[in-house]
Each structure stands twice: as structure tokens, then as C-alpha cells.
Image (cartoon, rainbow, N blue to C red; front, side):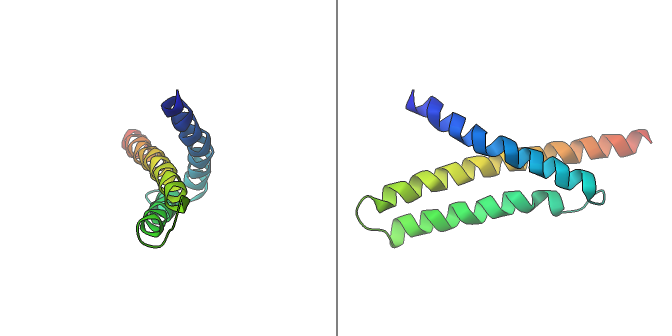
Length: 97
């Protein structure tokens, strides 16, 4: 049950990020890098939280930072998958025209 709750938390954060990514994709030029900005942000946040948990935390603080790092990396994967799907859609849309 805790794993299901953790997955639901990742989805609850990931879905609005995916919608934001689709909005960025719609208003930017085709083939541009802008749609991957949320992916990079969550990668940086996840890595920084992991580094903070391993090297700079005391007590139970490290556990909280590890959980936040896992959440950020999970959302990063959702964002990365959304970006790749948008690239595939754009590729086939340009092929048909």
C-alpha cells in the first residue's frame, strides 16, 4: 500500500508537469529544446537532494531528502517520456504534411 501511495504522489506531481510541457510544446517552435526544461529541472533537483542526503544531512533529515530525490527522479522520468512522445508526434505530423 505505501508503494501505491508513493506512485500516486509521483503521478499527482507528474501530470501537471506533463500538461505544462505540452503547453510549452504548443507555443514554442517545432523541434526546439524548450519542452525538456522541466526534465532538466527535476534532474537537477533530484541530484541535489540526493547529494544533500548523503553528504550534508544529520539524523532523520537524510531520509526526507532521499524521499524527495526519489519523487523528483520519478517526475523527471514522466517528463522525459512526455518529451519523447511529443517528439514522436511532431515527427509524424511533419512527415504527413
